[in-house]
Amino acid sequence: MQNSVVNYPAMAGAFMRKFKLFSFTLLSAVALPLAAQQALPKLQLAEQITLSGLSSGAYMAGQYHLAFAEQISGVAMLAGGPVYCAQNSLGLALEHCFNKASSSPDMSAINQYLTAQRTAGKLAPVTALKDDKVWIFHGSKDTTVYPGLAAVLNQQYQQWVDADNIALITDKAFGHTFPTDNTALGSCDVSEAPFLASCNYDAAGELLKHLLGSVKAKTATGSGQLIPFSQHQLAAAAKGTLAETGYLYVPKSCASGERCRLHVSFHGCKQNAASVGQAYVSGNGLNNYADSNNIVVLYPQTTASNMNPFNPNACWDWWGYTGADYATKEGMQLKAIHQLVQALTD
Image (tube, rainbow, N blue to C red):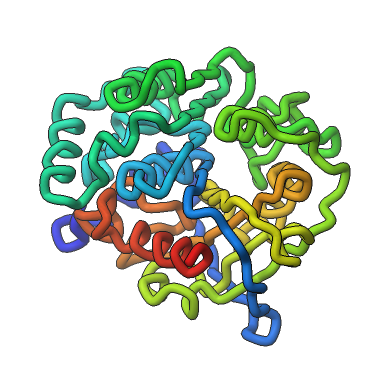
């Protein structure tokens, strides 16, 4: 949705009533001082990457996949819905892509739009998706994003990807959270910050196994380095839409020059570092697998804003707050992430 035609103050009331996850609080995007940011080591990264994301991050992962599929071999989406579900409209996002059991996205219109964008060269050709691995997860007790949307996302992807390459997991009685096997976190049926929970389920390991085919056992503790870096310096497009500071987890093997893969992990709403510190970038379990499997993990960070654009909870743009092209290569955030990936893999 274009900002010029949206009555954001009126929409704020809808957020207050319907977004249980999204409290109407301006979350300050506190960037690390430049002195705290670090230079990145020279890395030897494979061109093909994998993606994952939770909630708004799941929507973002799907959008990035469709835009830049030529460089992607797999995507994992937790607690999300079909790509372009909101159709550039916050009203449709609330009605059909969020928490209502009556959610019924207009898939005919959505897929027609995606086809038109491919024709215009704003999305990757559909042939680039065919052999990719897709992992879709949704907890059955999720009251923030309707669990039935996972089936819609699965059906959408079956148009483009071989069915044998798609895993759909919807039989876990979990809430709106990133499930882990870490016993020191909160209850799995509660949706609360930092949206990581003790579920006796290792989502990080399960998604990586599907995306990569097989993985070595994770390390007990992370031995690599979590590096805060300037997204604005690394990607020119990031200045208008991402936080100043992003995070990169680099295993010792990768820092020393070994050939490694890149995995991009998109946080959910209210799960950015300005909101939860390093809880997500340190505690979702991906870094432990990164150490034993030569994987560098990029944790890009959004920033919160109250008006222009209206994004008080630092969500990724899955409804159009950055402009009508948000789900294409021309989208501000997709362009910024692509520049970050290119800077790391070139």
